[in-house]
Length: 451
Ligand code: UDX
Image (cartoon, rainbow, N blue to C red; front, side, top):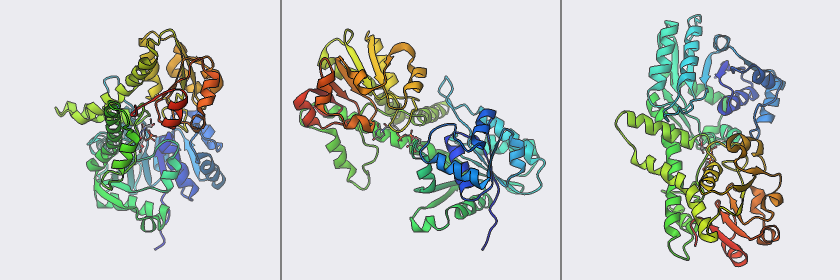
């Protein structure tokens, strides 16, 4: 059966919006994306990305050559000139840690106003992470109220959570492990599933990739459960790492390798260290915690996951103090500021918590270096640390080095390198990137989960 490719509009040009827009466009779909930022629209229309994401530049270039990606600042026109609209706007966290749905509210109102003028069936798909009930009760309701149309008959509604990790968004988009479709009704789900069969061809059968259809609310909760579970695995590894430190000869990595071989557990996200950061884990755990608490249901597991994670930053400073005594007269160096390698993103980065903890303990001489996040780090850390442009400068005459991001260029450093530049070679490895035996033999080396 030959089907025409539906025309697509995407509200929001962040990671998810822009990666999806350029992926669809690169495969010959006609896409209109929207942003409220005119400069951003111009930049993308010239074939360039406003942020770095591995592989995105190639997709954008292809979309630009094919001339089928257009970015505009008007959701109304985007909706009217498409068959399917994806919502990929931000759902940040408010000061009280509840979810901010104002962008979702605005954009769904605008979709409603536009659909008032449209005769044909239209499908609206939410990709933004939203607390359960939002797709039906906010997005659906706004569209009905502002369009006067009937849901299920005039327009369809889906919620499709995304599972993109920064730095791997393009790879994951083209090689998903599953597609989760929350649907208002069968027609909505069928329309979205058909789009993905057109986009992926025989990928699903060839790669044993399931498409799961479910209610809107289940799909909304899949996203939270997914991120919360991954974060729980990390905090679990960190809690056991602290137990491992109570006795010599236990190495937490060996322990986690051991349990990871159980097919019911698997080995991913059991890496103990200075803890998780990033735009999603903290935000999503807080949002779902807050949502549950408002309904008088407090998740004790998730509260602990956050506490254990925050404590890792304090714990690593304790480890340094154990080794050096008072830290306040020492020169402390931090290698790695971004929340993970491969990105300049500083959101919720453990480095911020470690610096705050050091300052709390009156440490004033802190030097930081990161291969990619220097400019971004200044926005978060201001003048609380000194910034330098190389590893050598960062560790020169230093009393103690903290490794807080597992960048490749730190992994290759030898004990001799630290000995050569540092005043006293004390190395605290928050990402467990060095050989324990080699480093403990040659210098003062401490890490998480191995005494
Ligand atoms: C995450 C999820 O992986 C993704 O599916 C979701 O859509 C958004 O959140 P991201 O924040 O980009 O993606 O980064 P990820 O690679 O998952 O790492 C998150 C944090 O956990 C990093 O700070 C990383 O250093 C830390 N981490 C990861 C550990 O401390 N130990 C591990 O074993 C794995």
